[in-house]
Image 1 (tube, rainbow, N blue to C red):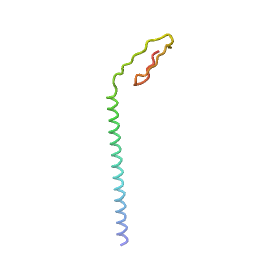
Image 2: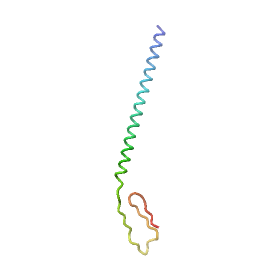
Image 3: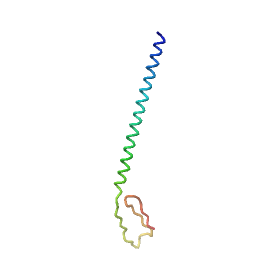
Image 4: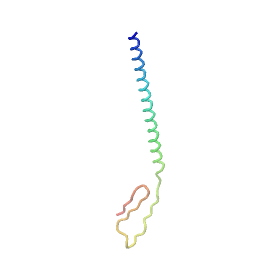
Length: 80
């Protein structure tokens, strides 16, 4: 009787470990899927957002320096 109880407890323990392993794997796959969808959405949003930004330089006055710096919305432009 003691052997049967030990075998049943071992089977229950192994089944619990198997259920926890499957649960952890499914949560991991779900997290990977969500991150993949978010990264693809960010990639497509960045591609769609890029559009031509008109930039005009001001006329030079006598008090301005030789170097002009302005920001066109996508990064700084430095005109030497």
